[in-house]
Amino acid sequence: MTAIPPEPIRGQFKGKDIISLGQFDTDCIAKLFRITAQMREVALSAAPSHVLDGSIVVLLFYEPSSRTMGSFDAATKQLGGQTVVVTSPQQYSSVAKGESFADTIRTFEAYSDAIVLRHYETGSAATAAETARHVPILNAGDGIGEHPTQALLDLYTIWEHTGRLAGLRGLVAGDILNGRTVHSLIKGLALYEENELYLLAPPELRLARDDLAAFQQSGIRLYEVDDVGDIPRDCHFWYWTRVQKERFRSDEEFQRVNNRFIVTKQLLETYGNRDMILMHPLPRVGEIEDAVDDDLRAVYLRSQIRNGMYVRMALLALVLGRIA
Ligand code: NCD
Image (cartoon, rainbow, N blue to C red; front, side, top):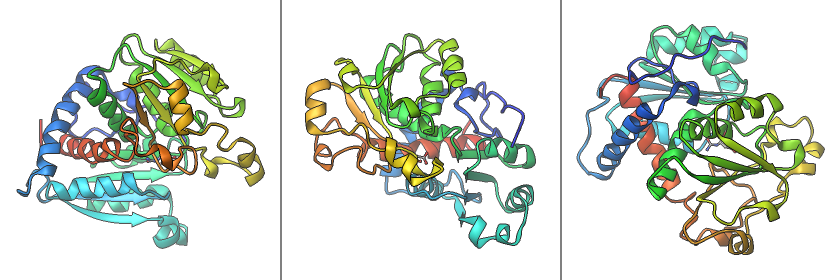
């Protein structure tokens, strides 16, 4: 799938597709985060909100999802909107009868004010955005490409804990090659000054060389490492990820690289520090020991999940033009 690059947001969210972190600048992230903080209050208050009254959001998910789907659904309903949930359209919709991607998008466009799309093909969200002329497309993960709303909630979580998004040192571990959340997160952190990331992965799961070069050109400092001994002790955050099993040709290839790096209490004790946070986009499948969950630095089952709903509430209100 090839598509034209998405339009930059430049302060004007209304009607925009959200395809890539590359559309954002620091001002629009600051604006989004101001509204996200307000949305938290809305969600915590018992009073019903009418921000999305009368709007319908289609959740079109070709791949499995718990948090992205659940939080977009909850975010819409928190604001008084409604959802049409279409899971596994390749099995349960007319896609199973051979309907094309374009016709599927056109169909759901006719019923909705926005479409949240998760698809296994990289570039699918941009293609859908070209097809849907009347409603915004929000990319909820396109193959190994990007997952911008996840990166926005990740940035929000980092900002909430450190008070800034510049001058940060972070560790990203796991599947850097196939992890779409990582690709969006790197683009997001590259918007700010003086950020550096250590990328801990087996050689087979390093960033694609073109992506590495492009990211480095954008100003962020990236250091590729393949040994836990190379983790700097003074990171502000660790961002662990799952090896993306569904992107491998065979189980054997997957097993060869799966869970080379596991967060244990001992690893955190040895290479971590008191002030850092430990993040994960989830699901985790063995790469963080359960014993670590009680550590207050482990935010993945706490604020990182909750922030997903708040950020998505803010984003929906903005792209649907209900908040300027
Ligand atoms: C991620 C995804 O789907 O890319 N999940 C999520 O949305 N939080 C990460 C993953 O599946 O490993």
